[in-house]
Length: 286
Image 1 (cartoon, rainbow, N blue to C red):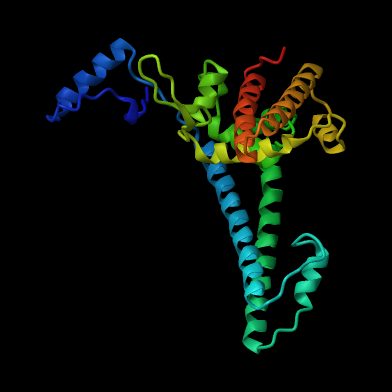
Image 2 (tube, rainbow, N blue to C red; image 1 turned 30 degrees about the vertical axis):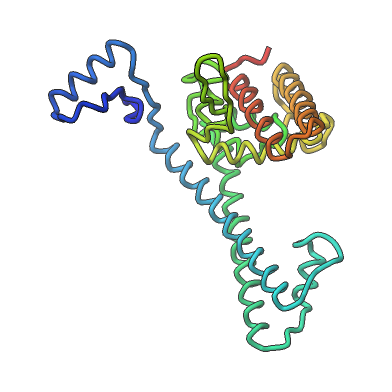
């Protein structure tokens, strides 16, 4: 049994440490049920997990370079006002700019070259991620998770390799707590004080689920992309995912209409979405 070191009971006043005393402490804690076991992933799952995190890093690098280009242009007095940034029309506009100084033109060219390299890299990695997700060990679980709106291959495969065995969480609330999406609490006596989310547990999955939660600002079960992802799935699962979509959309709108900030509403939706995900992965879709 592998236990979480941070959850091993320890008395602050006990300053003597030996192997014999540590062994006795572990035996007592194990007998009393005070130790929390952790799941040890396979080497294959660890490799895929690191590959997906590398993909996230590459996308983050691409986003940063694009921001640098926009900031560079603003410093030179160039502002695009004919639509959204990084559309094909916007890219043509950037390439057509004639800088006053040759060095500025070289700087812009180098930035655009970096963007092209990173976009090519991200496309190549994305294709490889699709290949990995289609492997027998991942295909069924990834397809199950993609039944939910906002969850594409990257998020689905990340959930599979980061969590591995969803049944190690006895309830949806335990899964939410593992992701750090439950409110922190400092209560004493008759007073109950709730704060922001704990942000404990897996940072990568929490970030990905919040990204998925933003899609629930609206919900259309007849979306062509959603119907394509759900093709071939069992009817109970599709019905379950539809119930989740309608409920999460109503939750987001209700919180926003009550005056909550959009970020707070999205985080609340992410917490409830994680509960639906747990239910789908342990077979509680009835």
